[in-house]
Figure 1 (tube, rainbow, N blue to C red):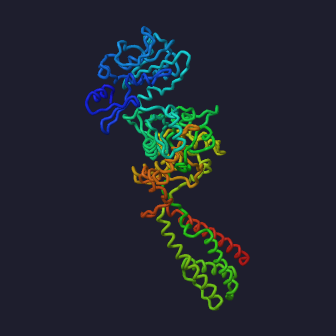
Figure 2 (cartoon, rainbow, N blue to C red):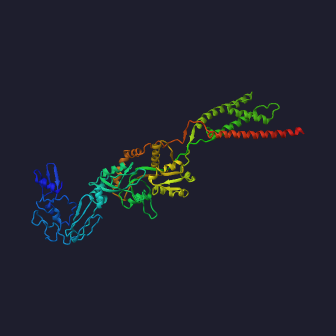
Figure 3 (cartoon, rainbow, N blue to C red):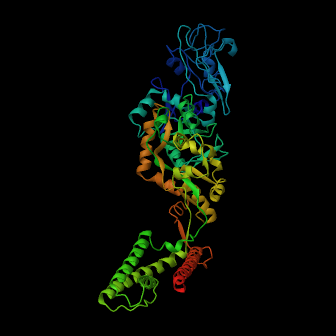
Length: 602
């Protein structure tokens, strides 16, 4: 109720005043409290001055005291009147001040947040009144300390109060009761009056900024950190103004020791909270305080998959190199054993017999007829064991070969930083982050420094085409990799990207507050409840649709299409090599035959 509404209620029946013990009145279960001229006169005895914060709802019609001058008029000092203190209402001299200031000095609030400023008396007409108008209502402040006393006054910035309708955090914590309750009961603490906080935000893995015309800052937060912010605002009872760092970075330490980005805003106490997931490291911990760990994050390399390829030498892949070596070793062993054990035929040369046996055993490997009769039991035992082993291995080879000819290998050559150093691919990276600082400190940085291209968060999606073509890769955290891959899959239905097998820079992540901020423990208790309920993981999963569709995509795919000449070029190469060797052998035979026939002709 306003003052004049209370007076009208008192003039009606049913309202009972309680005075002088307390300045209140009630009607059944409705209670109101207010001050009149007598109450103010009793309360201010011995005080150095008073402050009037709002006067637009004063009793300007004289409803309460039946006189035109208001309570505010009685408070103002007037140099033309006597210095006696007014103690009774409705007197003949209603404009005498309740407070006498021998040499009036004034402390005023202004649009520039003035503290303890002496305002000349003539600037307010000698009445000790400093007033200004905000966007919503006029405010007046009267502060008349006695000449021999020094009183300091603290005020929040008027523009912030107007925008958010609450006090600043520093002003709220200036109340001893509020500060003590926050220290003793952080898990249940809630500001008694609405408080306005400045919160630093920026696009990142767990938060996305969108335009919002209804917000004083013109932006709002989306992503997993948005529900966390909502829980903090509701449970702690504060409103907020979102602030973006000028450099749009998370924050790294500069050569002069200062910090940029959101970390710099919090470290310089320009904002109260950094609302994002910051990687924890000793350097940042020396500038700000980290809340309890919200998530653990690792960095990976996001690269584009190459076009499906078929290896021309794929016909060798059904058997491992070890099996191939063992198979040919067995062939030579069987050939040597039968060469020694088999009795030579009359008139046959040893080299002719050896070649005939080797060709026969190799034909067994190719599932051909032996062509030689083995009469002795020992010969049959050796040859029979060889035929059994060759049959099993060749059947397994044929089955695997059919599968491999239908498979296509998808190249994924970049699996760690060393692979990146050995390539000539351009590297995309966001500057002014803990990850960029980590890469710059690695030994490999010198080899890739000239290939690094700095991009902003808004450039992530446009650069996907460069990554898809294989000309660029992106070094970022797992959350961003998964989000970009899911967004591309939702649009194209394909998994054209992969994350490197090796991860690096595994760090806990959390939000930050100012060093020594009393809010830290209150925030920690709420974060623990969110994590214990599994809410944060749920919000992360919900923010990435199709997030797991491409996480474990195979490196090979199966196709059903006719074989091309490229696919079987390896087998043709073996055939061509065999023809060349046969021609060489034929030529050698001719030379040897000619050499052996010359002595007989002589």
